[in-house]
Image (cartoon, rainbow, N blue to C red; front, side, top):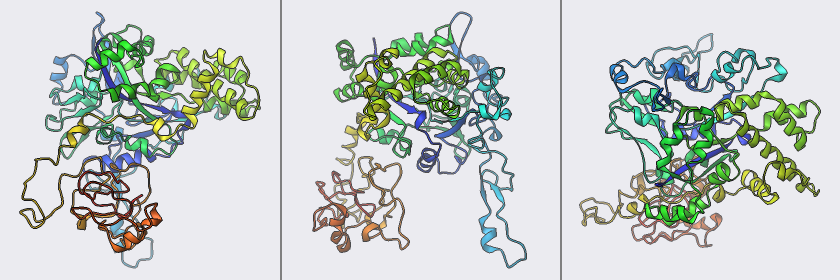
Length: 602
């Protein structure tokens, strides 16, 4: 047994409203740069649909993921090393820009500079790649909300498999939203595809990253990834991918997409697994056995033998405790309602999904039945091959059993808790019918419906956080004091994710905007600047403590006299500033080095 820890995510699809907030905030934080205009580390797809890029699930076309040889050996679907070497300069299995979309903006200058004319001036779409006029024909979520109409059957690879069973009448259509990020797999085919060895999986938390210094832009990883969540930056010539917001999770903060999720559908926690079993689990012959085989890789963090092996492997007590409290472990292993996305790719994905029950409930309600009655729901789950068979193609390689069991447990929870909330006695047959105790059903309800922030995101600080504490010790010039060689007392090494700071500029040069990558989700102050450039509650835009800011301290929940600007290095904020050196930032009062506020404290 070789115990390793992995940060994993579970998304409850019943709670996704398709607002795309996660996509927008992720893009603003990570890919709002030249060369990444078409890149969406997080995107929300409507299912059924083509996806992004188009038909990425058709691995007979794109050759992503792993496959088994006749001898049962795991090999890349894109071919042997020799085949990939021969294609290294002209890869035939790459999606083109048209498969993603040609990113565009509009010629707004034509609207502003147009002279007085008889017709209304037009802002024509311009390609962000070529700068030329372009026709807008496709986008990352172009087929949003279309669902399973007749025109979708031949375009969705999964729906195409079930086309003989799909009822095409309008009243039989269904849809749901599927948010997608990088799966940070236990057996990543992208890393195995890279000729330069630039893609690696971090041992401390399992996050898969790209070493930009090693990457040579061969783009073999794009073919190798079956989820097509690695992108090519056409300006830098490097590959880029979702980073699981590692600077945030290293200090115990959830990813940006999780932090800003309107539906609160995401859960993040630690999973312990046996690294020695990964290859064996990914090499099972029958693809329908991949889901249970991956469940067998996960270890019980409450088992004393597992805890002892984890300690021997160097996993800290904080991470072991986080694994024991992990909401992800409960949803995946204890309740077994979360399922992996396309386990047939054999990459052992670590972003799992709770399948949606809503389409089944909607069908029952529209036909005049009680959509909350567990007997009706159980019957509908068995009778409606769609969407159940579609969900099975999506999450369990076509195996109906785990999907049906997950949906039945969700249906049982809904029926059981409705009786509890109405003050009625729950049907005693509900819990045994899904192999759960009544207490477990109530615990599942609390986790899925009303779980607080700290229960949805159980993220221990990474080992790197201890190294960050040493950043400002003995690493600068001892003469860098006020009036010294640097001519400033501002420490340029304070940009750490312990502080919700905007940038490394000196206090007088700061703006009052909050960096989304650093935002802790506990306040909206600073997200929208005021029209005159001043910070919220009258704080100066440079974030420095001022008389007006101090006067407004009481309005922000601080002492009546406000925060005093008495930090030893001159920084202050609207709110409490209790740091050892007078640090404060966006409501943070525990800074250990000098920092300035983003214009307002929480």
